Length: 101
View 1 (cartoon, rainbow, N blue to C red):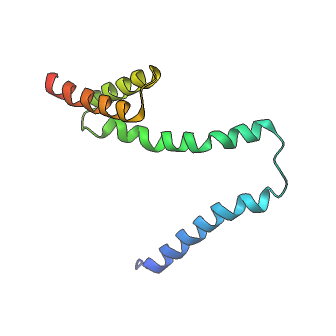
View 2: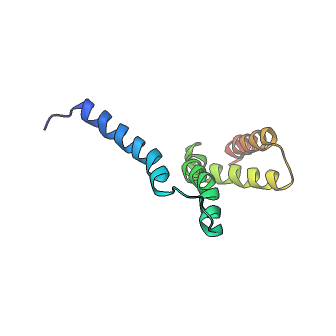
C-alpha cells in the first residue's frame, strides 16, 4: 500500500480541528462543577510534565545524571529559586556529576 502524504495531512487537520471544536460544542453553558473546573485547570500542567519528564531523565544519555539534575532542580525551586537559577543549577549538577561519576 502506497503512503499518501495528503491523507496524513488531512487526518492531522481533522484531529486538530476536532480537539479544538469539540469542547466548544459540548460545553455550551458555563461549567459550575468545581471538580471539573479544577480538573481542566490542571490539565496543561500535567500535559507539560508528561511531555518533559522523560526528556529530562534521558537527555544526558545516562539516567542517573538526569535524576541528579532533576532532584537539584526540585530542591532549588523549593527554596524559592528563580527559573534561570533552577535551570543553571540543574545543568551544572548534570555536568559535575558526569565528571565525577
